[in-house]
View 1 (tube, rainbow over the protein chains, first blue to last red):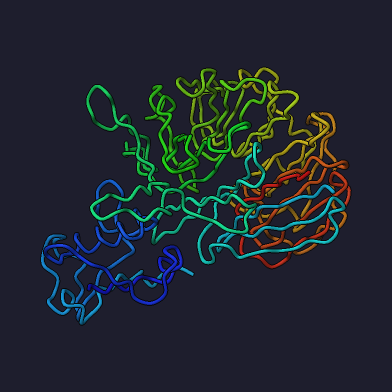
View 2: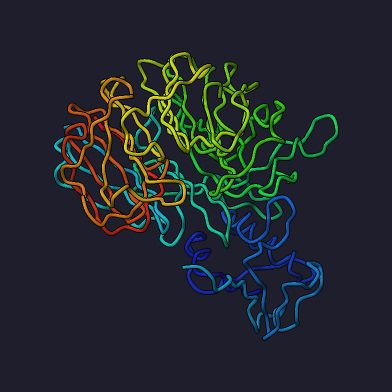
Length: 98
Length: 392
């Protein structure tokens, strides 16, 4: 089970509290995790990745295991502790604005 | 008993203000979608319990919300269904994808950037939602970068009416300070094929065939920064308004100048008259008197607050040129708020109610057509939009 930590506004939008737990088929990558997340919570489509380009929205970053994974290729395997569910895949909103 | 529901969009959420027909005591619900910008919220004339809201964020982009119970509960259309394993989710209520050229598959057109170079269209947000008169599932959306979209399935999916961008003047459109936004949509109640829209800074456009083809209707507008007095596009129109009983008469608050047209926009003439300044954003028409119109003069394009720190609504009862200041109940000293283009509305009770919201978070109401005013709320986040529903 993969754990995903969402920013507060997206938790509200998806009607969830705390970490989201997802089953991911095949290799655990940014793309497969986000595909599973959007399939489970369709209202999140377009909020993390652009609908058309599938690129990460500019004010969001991806972290896991104390590493910034934002610029890793979307199909690169995520760290093993994320794949095993020991550590969450964190989607973080920029600390900016009011 | 009759009542009113005032739908208020703010920088940090939505609020719904409700009252009976006396409009003296108000219930306030909200914030809905706390922390998000609510550019616009509007109810369906065909089903007053059906509301739509444009929820946006610099972080997370565009969300469309829909209520079927007058704003008590909300849903993201298409996002409510849990897909079966292997099935793709159907939620696309926030998906606004511009059409491309059918011939080349490339972007339909480009627009002028601030520096005069050409720039591709990039979707940013929905500024305005205009539900159809007779179908609660049909809604028009005005977006930034400027384009018109329509849904016919209750906001589950949106499709561009791309004849607007494709008619040829697109490369001359340019963003105003607030972005290049399609902010006003006026449907003609007597002719479902006719729609008026306004874009900053391109001007006003009209379709007479339900959105397939569009023409600029900006003759008579004069803009200081456009040397050509017959310029087809480029005008910074802030808002247009129409009375239901006279769909050929339009009123406009331009960047500078208050204008009117008596031939559905084919020609405009200035009616600023004795206003203390003719800069402003809002303009609206009395519900029962088609020649009674309201504006809120703002000092200038570089000082977005009322002249002399006095918040005054100006009313003309003869369709412009002669204006009276309405001040009773409004602050007449040290007031430096703005009233944004979608932040004024009227109800259809007798007497007509008039409402507007400020960037200081006040929503003012008049239950006597503007003669006197009182704040419904004083301390909301900056108000972006105000709409009113008159309930039976």
